[in-house]
Length: 131
Image (cartoon, rainbow, N blue to C red; front, side, top):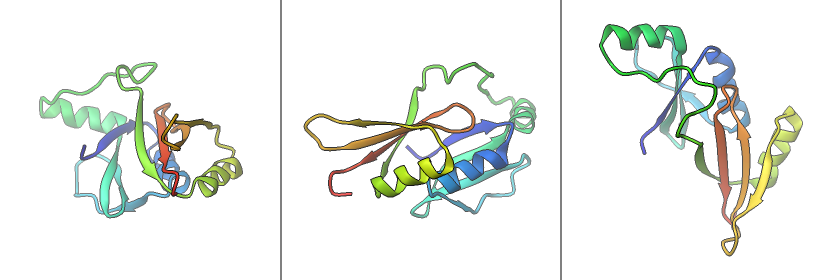
């Protein structure tokens, strides 16, 4: 998968969540005609953020399909990322007052943290037994 687009009313709050809570970096974004951010992991742009109203106008003007607002995320349940530094990440969430839950994948030793971004999108972080 190349990237995920998160459409938000509060693009700065969404940017801050992915940057400050998950440790992503804001990076280069082409000069698109709607406000937004691209967030990178290890030099790869993986989360794109677009402001809802202006992105809706952009897609409408180009006759591109766009998702409609919904109470939940529809058929997409979550985004998952490989992560490292389980205790550090857990402490970061606690310190920021971010609600999260934990799980352990049987037989693999993979520890998981689950939380939601400011738009209600569930994020899964997977930590290998070595990390």
